[in-house]
Image (tube, rainbow, N blue to C red; front, side):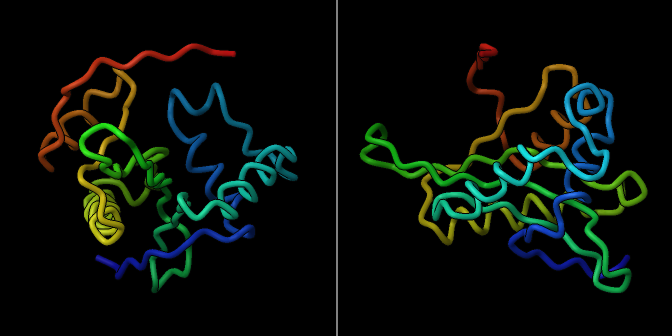
Length: 154
């Protein structure tokens, strides 16, 4: 297995990141990886990058020098739980050819370590109900389906 390094995403990583997000049944219907990217991707990147409580990260295969995974961490302060901070993991994707090679495991371990380093009391994430393999993957780390989530499109 190739060595994987994690770092803060940079604007030139955006096309690879959007391609990763689009490379599955759900993402194919909601992302647009065509280049040039629609401007809203760069707008979102700039907002995330400027916010100290956000970390958009990439996993890079060192030998290949390519982005093979991405995720976003949000560090959320709260009054509940005695003022606890929580880490929110979103947008986890691994390149198709790198799946089942331990990259996803390394990404989640890295993300949890980042949350610990920011003194988060817990880590949470959401995953689509249809992603059964993802559910088993997260449960293997000790995540539990403790809450029911709702979304409303605007």
